[in-house]
Image (cartoon, rainbow, N blue to C red; front, side, top):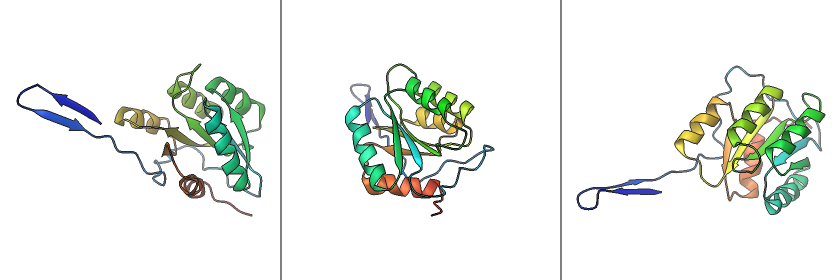
Length: 163
């Protein structure tokens, strides 16, 4: 929330509400997401906070995924580069991290793997950030803190799981 006041006559409140985790962005012209074929699919978790990475790893393991982690955008791009095109169907990426601008990181991920599903995570998403991420075809947003159920619903809504 932001408050703007001229001191005497007018006050304006700008309230930024999070985008629900289940709201998907328009897929545009990029390839369809890779269906999850069996248990233990890889999901890349990109977050500079170790506690957040560890929590997400535990949740994803409980959901029968095989999480991989990166502490920043540079590490994430190195991991993406090591694997074949469809080995990592989904990336959970924090938007505020050191070593690489968040939009630059997403742009590079899209260049390397246009078919990958990307979930952006952040404490607050401002309108200009949502617009920029939408332009880069981020699939959905999760506003921190989020629940295990919200994470599970986001993943299930984005990628069909065929067991």
